[in-house]
Image (cartoon, rainbow, N blue to C red; front, side):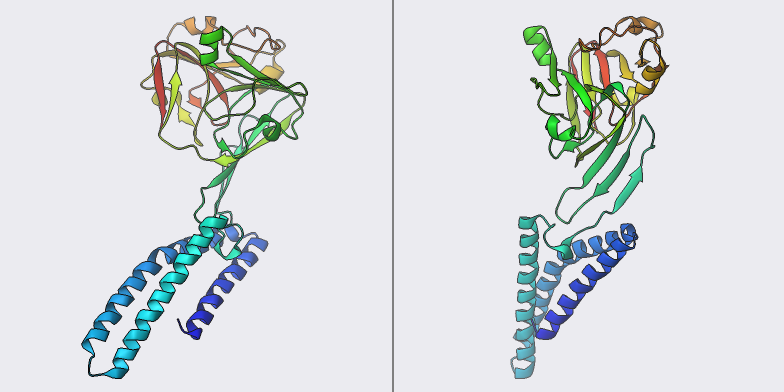
Length: 335
């Protein structure tokens, strides 16, 4: 590869990095950086193909120009340049793969997605960032009310330990329900009490959690999108689950292959306004209110929360936890 080619290539990458930095500083990087990211990805993808084509074409020229030494030399140089270019691109991709992309600013894909999914006390927002050759990372905000909250994580968390996830949150305790443990021991509760510990160590995708906080807070979850299709094993009786999706889904549509009686959720806003602290919301497959007489499990510290249903729901929302009353064992498939 000639010195001019190296200068042009270096200048290109320097320009890309400079423009990207300026765009980020001016808060207009969402569109510009996305274009740059895709351009670099396409460059890495087509460079080997171009190199092969150049090698073939110059090889043909070299074989058909036996009497023309000048043409043979140009064809030879073309082959050498193409091979060097192919080596450079291959090494660049290998280096990016090893360092994860973040150490080399010219290969960074700056934040390229920013979307809201209904900001409010019962919902949250997503911010997605990505780097070349890396999975997209998302951040989900869950707004917590003082008292009990029924939550889940729609993301595969980068660091799922409770101490890390709930750092900065003034909370009392967190509980989940393990069906397998319930079958084996008769008690499926797993818990972690702040300052005391417990048998619950991590916050996992697919599970629901009762979280008691001492004051309103915004919980930020960071991780990657769960692999799909995803299968969640549901057992007869109550199952404590979370939605493994970034999008709201219709309950009846997503549970099409499951024989179930109803779904319970919890609205912390309604609970905080209710004198008895009741926040149950329900989706029932039955016309008669039989399912409303069967209450889901609640932690011992919460007591048996009785009372009328406060509202009805039709969809699963990411970031919330749910109790599903299943009649027959099956697998909930999330596409």
